[in-house]
Image (cartoon, rainbow, N blue to C red; front, side, top):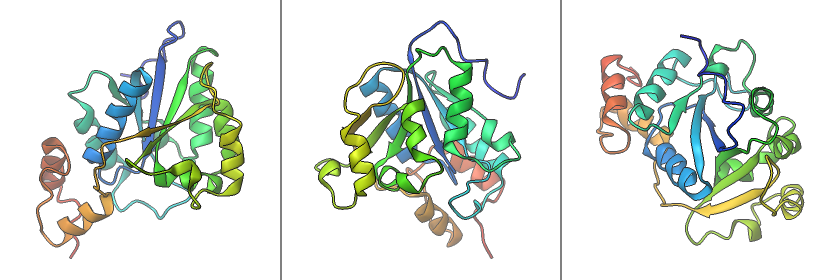
Length: 223
């Protein structure tokens, strides 16, 4: 089997979603965001791309091979979800702009590509490497909490506000921003790691298949 999923079908113009993250570990918040966005935008597939070496955060606690396998197990039952190992297999730091550039090269130029982000990640976008280029490569779908007025938020940097205000029209392969209200699941990977470290239960926060893997490999058990 090739390390990447089959080269992305060049002739279908069905939209593809990209869900990146350290996934340390993957949990129901990630999966539900991808599911609701896939439905809202009409995504044929969502590629889950675990970060290998994230440049802007601390090194993940957990080896990339474990994080990749947890994602594989988490998405196994959903025919729309796929795992893409390219960032884990790359020796370079994982920049989203590079990953989207690679995907864009594999796709038909007219294929819509959607980068799926939580609100916090989106508000931090101006700190990302070559962040303005992201809009040239993909549409961006942002999961907002119900009632959150993200675009009016003081938390949004003015540079980002300006960029978004020019990019509301949806259509074509890239360039628009869509805000969707999501079912609020206040689940965080940090809280899951902390709970596991003190031998607490994280059942119902993440798929059983992921929890079984964590126990089998004794992940997040710090002395």
